[in-house]
Image 1 (cartoon, rainbow, N blue to C red):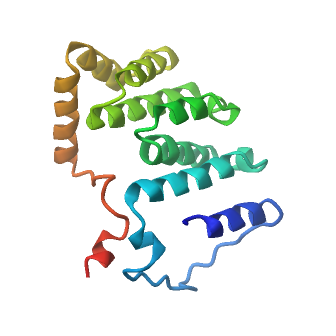
Image 2: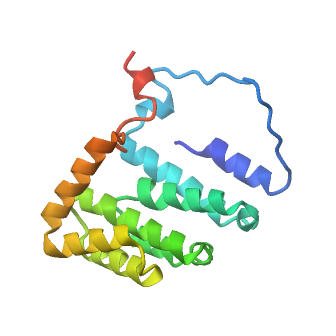
Length: 184
């Protein structure tokens, strides 16, 4: 199971503060039987999603910087929960999410839709997220382009996003975080 250490630090952070030391104080040993290497990517994402959800629900989450809160939701909704639209929609209704600026919520909805389009599934969720993004930020040209292209042809939109990823060199989210170490 991934997460007991995260859970401990999340709970501990509610009662104490942490500092920053700009030096290596601990080395993390990665080996073939290490849980971070041996667990499948989907299972790993599910464990990490639970950690993020628990962190969001702490009383101190609202004290985090806006950038931190946005990134936590980005990691959770765009990366970890891709393929689970019901959970994504549930979290998007949380107060912690609705307190983000409208433009950021719109961007997150657009990114959620983009990931689902690339995966080629959850048509109804995609339409809902693109609609929500349009309502929250009508002037977002990226969302307008994505929404119109998806209306014309979901397949063409998917190919466009694949091409965009290839050109930009974005690493696949299906790549293991320790791929360079685990391969030897």
